[in-house]
Image (cartoon, rainbow, N blue to C red):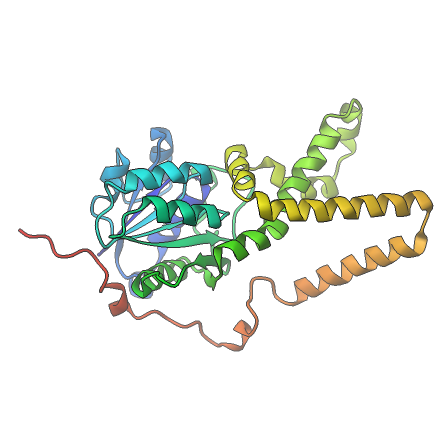
Length: 322
C-alpha cells in the first residue's frame, strides 16, 4: 500500500485527497493507498476528515510524512518555503515530494535549496479551482479532465516523474509537462491576469461613491467577470508575489490595450472598435471550438497511456529492519 501525505487541506488539498480515496484501487495506476492529512489549523483537519478527504489525521508535519512514499504540499505558495525547510529533517529517504502551487519557478528554487538530495521533487499545478476556499468547497471531481502541469529538470529521477504522473492520472487529470519558467510566463496571462482584472473591476466600482446605487444594477456580466475576486486572498497574494516578471509583462500589455481603446472610444473610431471586438470574438470562439485542455494531437488517442505499476515501486522506501 502506498502512503500519501497531503500537507495543507484547503480546497485543492482536500479535493485531491477525496479524489485519491475515491479512485478504484484495481483501476488506479497507484493501486491501494492511504492518505494522511496535516494542516496548521486543527479545525481544517477535522473538516477534511469529515469530508472523507483523508484516512488518517496527523498532529504534526513530521508525523504526517513519517512513513509516506509521496508528499503533496498544498499550502499557500509562500508558506512552501518553510514547509520544505521542515521536510528536510523529517521526510523519509527515497520519498517523492510534489506541490500544487500556481507558480513553479520560485517553488522549484526553494525545493533545490532546502530539500535533501535523498528525495525527489516534481513540481505540479492542476489547472482547476474555484472561487470558494477551504475543505467545505472540496470536490473529488475537481481535477477530472483538467490539465495538470508537471515541471521537471534533466536530473529529476524518472521513477519520481512516473509516480507523480500516476497520481495525476489517478485523480482523472491529464499530465502536461512544461518548464517552470515557461509555465509562469503562460499562466501569468491566462490565470493571474484574469485574477487582477476581476479584482480591478470590483475595486474600481466598489470604491465608487455611486456603488450603492450601482450594485442593484449589477447582473450576470458583473458576476461572471468579478468571480475570481471571491477567492482566498492569502492564496492569491502569494500567487501574485511569486510571479512578478511574468505578470508584469501582461499588465503592461493590458495597459497598452486600455489606453488604445480609450483613445479609440474618445475619437469615435467605429471601424477600429468593431475590428477589435470582432477579433476578440473570433479568438475566443476558436479557443472554445478547439476543446480547451486538450494538447495538440491528444484527441487522436483513443486511450491515454498508462503507467506500469512495477515502475512505481522501485524508488520506494527501503525495507525496514525488524
